[in-house]
Image 1 (cartoon, chains in turn red, green):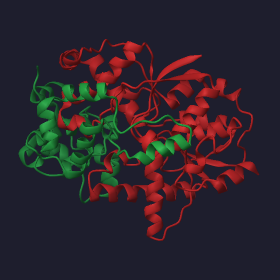
Image 2 (image 1 turned 120 degrees about the vertical axis):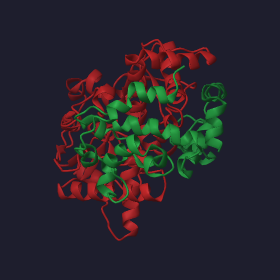
Image 3 (image 1 turned 60 degrees about the horizontal axis):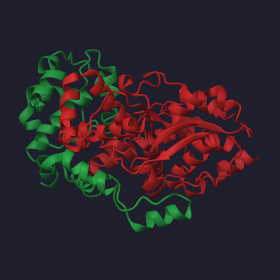
Image 4 (image 1 turned 90 degrees about the horizontal axis):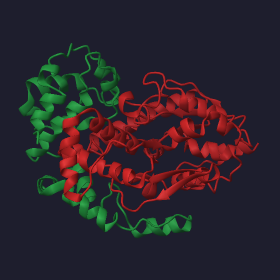
Length: 295
Length: 160
């Protein structure tokens, strides 16, 4: 039994409840124990909080690393931005002694200090590196033959390489490999390694508009590649690509392209019911996809 | 304690900014520049960090970086534009130049410890679906420690 400290972040438990259900269900079945921790704070997105005060921002993020050290458990993040932000803090504190000194001076005010032992993981890094592809293969009871799944990597799960350390920064292929395990057919398409602009979408009208424009390009590309669904690593990407579709619907453009997380695909291939995986809670109906899988 | 200016000079020195070859890898890699090229261009932004700092931190362009790190990954000179922009925003924030939307989200973080809004329907919805409640804020202990780590200056900048 592997144990981790569950770090839910802000997006999953408030706006992507179906995804949180899916993670809990699949991890339980895989024998991964997720310890509920009530003491964490927000990861403090660098694009917001570290933009106001770089050092105090890092201290706020690192408070979570200290709690993981106290528990002696690796952090298990649900959101790629939490993963990226916590990995970044760890990298900067590990590589720059003066930053660690300054951050620890601030953390000392609340009787905490970063020791350099915290480990930061993500749903997908745990599945790929800990459970492994072979370990997953043995759990697949209902291979998803006949559906075309378009991998969408997002950003912070693999960029920049020195923070994330998970996949090749130019030609990532680990999500492709994970999708392959479920029996689904991978779609190779132009926007596979594009960005959902989630982290830049909340700065006002201009950036919101930008995120819809890029969503349109991503959705067009996946459709053109014959995708039955887009498979992400991050709840923020799910939200952006779903909300993007709702906006584009207002403009008369219909995609009806389900956006799901890799754990949803994995859960289905392990024989779980869509409702157990929260797939009936998606903003874009997954029924056609599920029919295709059932047939 | 080192100041932000020293951090900027040390971790990402102005001499280093001068290494920019103006090759445009950053702009070519940037998702924001791809869809709104007339508004956002990281290559020109980077030049302005070096040459037009005071005017740059008055505007909102600096806040359009979506923090994806593609430019940082690809810059052949290792300049790390993403980190440069984050640091540069510190100077804008110091002068009170934080656009309304990021300010609203950060006020929410100060008050509740979360970037996303909470309402009671969230916990009802969670319960219906078999998930534990999250409550309106992070734990009181976490919220209190967060306030102390932020410090008065930080909170004053957010509250504006």
